[in-house]
Image 1 (cartoon, rainbow over the protein chains, first blue to last red):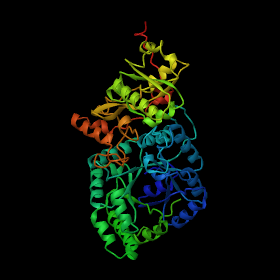
Image 2 (image 1 turned 90 degrees about the horizontal axis):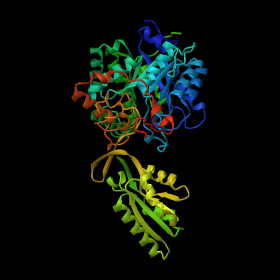
Image 3 (image 1 turned 45 degrees about the vertical axis):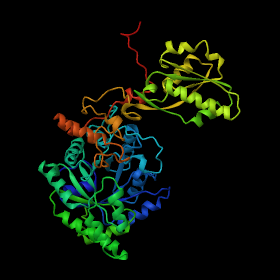
Image 4 (image 1 turned 90 degrees about the vertical axis):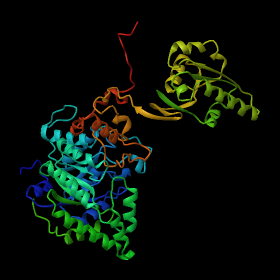
Length: 310
Length: 222
C-alpha cells in the first residue's frame, strides 16, 4: 500500500498494524507546559497524538501551536481543525503553516456549535463544513491548488482524517455519511466514543458490505468512564453519545472507590472485543483529563509495545 | 415575510424620555402580518406611551400614523408635510423601513420600535419560524426544498453533523435538525443518491459576505 504523506500513522496502517492514537486537550491559558506534561504521559504508548481544536467551543490554546509543541518534542501530532471558527482563507493558511512544521496528520471536523462553549454570543463561521474541508485538504495535497485557484509547488503532504458518529440519528444515514466523507478524501476515521458495541458492529458491518473498510482506516473511539456520574452525564447530557443502561449499571454497581478501575476494565474489554472486528484498523483513546490512564489501558489491552516505524 | 417583534416599552420610553413631541409610524407590510408594527400595534404603543408620560407628569405629545409601506419612497413622502413638527419618529417598520425613513428625512431622529428577526413563515398565530437567509443563490432544488443554510445551525451543506438526535438539533431540542428533514424528504422523493455526493464549498459572494447587496434589474427600469 503506497502512502500519501510522511505520516508515521499512515505507515503503521500501511504495514498492517493496528494503530493507536490518543488526544490531549490544550489548556485555557498560554501555559505550554500543560501540553508537554500530558503528551509525556502517553508518548511511548501511542503512534500519534490528536490535539483538539477549541473542543466543545471553549476557548483554549490553539491546536496548531500545541501541535508545533508536540512536534518539537519529537512526537507525531494529529491537527484537529474545526470549521466553526475559521473561514477557508484561515483553514488553508493553517494547513500550509502546519505542513511547514512537518505536521502531516489532520482531522477535519465541523465542530460543536458555539452554544455549548464559553462564548455563546460569538459569530460562527461555517464557511466550509467537515466534508468540504476534506475536499480542500485533498486538493491542496494532490493538485497543489487552493480553493481560490492558486497553484503552488510545495504541497502539504498530509494524511487526512475525519470523524464519524455511528450513534447519531438517523442511524440509516450514517453509512452514506461515511461514504461521503471517504469520497471527499478521508483516509482515516476516528469514531465517537463507543459504548453500544452491538450498534457499532452493525455500523461496521454495513460499511464492510459496501467495501468502505478497504478505502478508509477506521479507528474505534474509546473513552474510559471515571465513575457512574460520568456515565450518567454521557448518557443524558452529551448529544450524539449512546450509553446503554447496562454500562451505567455496571459502573454504578461497584463501590465508588472501585468505579474508576471498573471503567478502565470496561474500556479494555471493549478494545479486546473490537480488535477482532474486520474493519477496525486502530483505536483512538480519548481519556478526557485522565491521560495518565492511557498507557495502562493500552498495555492491558495488548496494544503495547507500539511498532517502531520511522 | 420579514418577521419582527415589538421592542419592550421601557426601551422605547428610554429613547424618547427627554423629548416632547413624537410621531409613531407603523407599516402595513410584513410587520402588520406578524403583529409587531401595524395599525393595531401603533395604537397600542402610542396609548401606552401617553399613559406612561401622563402618569409621570411629563409633557409629551404622541401622534401616530401607519403607512402602506416604509420601504417605498412614495409612501414615505406622505409624511413630508408633518414630520418637521416632531422631535423624533419611532418607526415600527422592519430595519429596512427604519433606514429608508432616515434616508428620506436625513435631518430627523428616527428610533426603531421593533427588533427585526428573520425571513420566515407563520406556523400559527404568534409563532413564526425562519426559512430563508437570502444567500442569493438558491439551492433548494438540490436539497428537497428544505434549506440547510437557514435550517441547519451550522449551515452545513453536507449534513447532518454528529449532534443530530431523534431528529433534533444539538443546539436545543426545540430545533428540528434541518438535515434530518432533508434526508426524509429526499427519501420521499426517491432522490437519496443526492445525499452521498459531496457538495463543494459554496460561493458566499452573493450572500452578506460579498458586502451590502443591491439588485439592478435593467428589464424593469424605466
